[in-house]
Image (cartoon, rainbow, N blue to C red; front, top):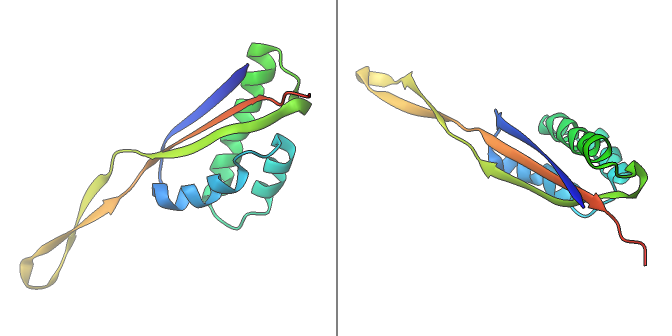
Length: 113
């Protein structure tokens, strides 16, 4: 059984968020939360909230034990890009792209063999 949590329209580029998400994939949830607590990137706080939400979904909706959970899947997709205009020299303009992303985390029970 598995549970998921999705955070959409996060105001960070997908490539920056993937650097943080790649560090927690496959880890136990306790180790993943510990890793995120000491990660020096701003998006780590958003990823931590998403992971806590996925854990809460597993415990409350699926009656899973929080101690046996691990991060089964964690990925970041690109969201819509906000386009803004910046004035430049001689009356011209250049485009500023403010990128967004969607963060998805799936947790599941670790099968003890």
